[in-house]
Image 1 (tube, rainbow, N blue to C red):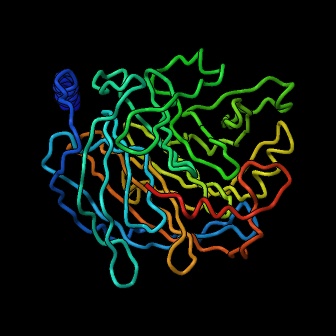
Image 2 (image 1 turned 180 degrees about the vertical axis):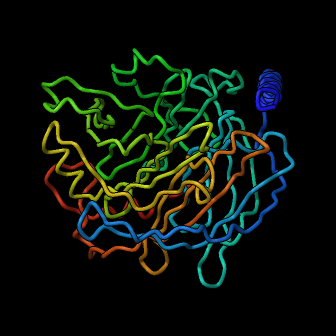
Amino acid sequence: MIIRALFIIAVIAISLLGYTAYMDRNLEVIEAAKIPLTIKAVPVPNQQFAIREPEIKEAPSLYWRGGIKISSPHKRFGGLSGLEVSPDGRSILAIGDKGLWFTGRLNYAPNGNLLSLTNGLLSTMKGSQGQSLIRKKDRDSESIALADNGAIFVSFERDHRILEYSAPLTTTIGAIPLPSEFTDIASSNRGIEALTWLAGDCLLAIPERTTTPPATTIPSQESVIEAYLWHQGSWDKLYLKPNSNYLPTGLSSTAEGDLLLLEREFSFWEGFKSSLRFFPALEIQTALSMPGYVMQGSVLATFEGSQSIDNMEGISSRIGPNGETLIYLLSDDNLSFAQDTLLLMFELQKQRKPAGQSTAGCSKNKTSYSAALETKAF
């Protein structure tokens, strides 16, 4: 009986993969098309965010600020990965696994909690020659980062690369050469999954993998997550301690210079698990000043079992109207009827630093407040 059930499941899975492959060969170019959206509220997850013993003294905690489930009858909606939310919280920018931009307008309840999303818009991404990204190997976009000047950086898998756009829904204005370590990537799905912009004109990129550096770099020969820092035309390397079997899927920097790393674990038996880690600005400065230093971070929340929520891949943060730090998480439904596109909002509750005391993102041994991180827009 069990063998028969497994056989049926395998047949269904193969059929779905075949149908998806067929659809992939017949993707039309979308030029800024408005799409209808259906929005449903997401109940508060059954998760006690602050009960764990923090690894970092005075580590912050999370507070639920609302969530929505987004769906659309448009056949190209879904598969959303990278996420950016505008500083005023009104606009959302996301990218899809099928080479699409998605934008919309966020709406809030009187108490400031996330309420709905309207004005949905899809548009096909352009390549470095102005061509529409319609081939499967060209359009697997995974993460985005919004620079201080309004430029958008997008990372891609399969054909591993980082493209720069002058603004959303525009043609590219350049590409960033990948670190030399990416020439030996064995898997087409283990590229850069997490991108964010740091104060000081730096781009931080993290691939979805762990590695063991040589003993000359990490004497303990422990497995680490390598993070690559692009600044003034060259790459530097930082190291993060792995979080069990979780791997990076999204990254965001706060206005105070802290890092938020979204991570995911998947198994066929347990499904998706998600984790959110916090790296304070001072720890980042230590890593910049001490080659070989491994950043630890502190786990803010994990979602597993009945609290797994979904396949969380996108993350963005901003300053709220009362000076609070708001965090948005986005799920990738993999264009599957068994998954959902969820947008969740949390408040990061931590002691706030006064203006002028925040640590600059990638400037070694300096402290400065980056107003640009609060005024960036798209």
